[in-house]
Image 1 (cartoon, rainbow, N blue to C red):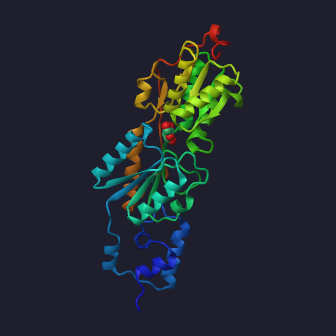
Image 2: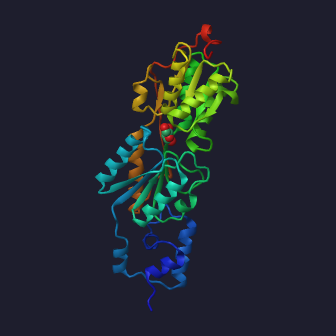
Image 3: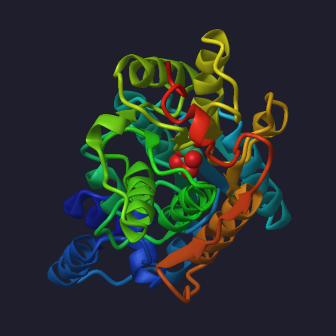
Length: 345
Ligand code: RIB
């Protein structure tokens, strides 16, 4: 009996769509192991694709899956807009999957998108995840791109903003205003973006001869409440500081609230900075000095790269790094000698 593409897929333990894409050399994003395994089985089973069947099998759904960690964070809606506009312009619709930073939800969505035969997936991982869902990604079921929170040492294309440079720039801005004791509210331990930003903080301190003090660092989860708890912890630590740097705007909003309740003036007593330049940073009192990320373009370019992969086109580079930029508003003042020791009473 003639060997079919279904026999190959079953033997290789991959989907029919995967076998088809590998046969048609549309195999960007598939792991080398998957490609070699499929090609070996095709040879062993002496399979010869039926050109008519091949056309049927590579039918597209014209749908792209978009997996995000926290749609309640105003950083992401602008990113989604960039993905949706670009996808629609190329004849695709999107399915938005919000994982609430939860690994189990992430895995469920991966399976749903695979079973729905979406043509590709744009994936921003949950910040809290330590062991990323590597297997589902690299099994090559469908083309992927990683957006913003990428996974290191993977072959999958990724699009992100240079977080180390962004944080380095805003900490240097504080140092240029005379601040030497600068506390830091980080994103989650193990999150690639949070680690990059902390590297930028440390690099700026080191280049100015300022000692890095772990006692001035707290780890949040990018949400407002973690900004509140981290700021309260810093205030209770007894450590002196004249500025606090936050790894995103939502945690800065939480930190601002704590300072206000404690009657500490911003920026007169303590300067504070955020990261993302979401709309909230423009309506806080004072307005937040922050780092702007090109949110719309992050989504737009991620969708463009994925659609190239779906169409079997080559991409110039596996990494696309976009540039952040400093937005100076009213939450930073020159350090005043007077307030140095009373700034966090
Ligand atoms: O505010 C949420 C953070 O998570 C952003 O800075 C963005 O980079 C994402 O990683």
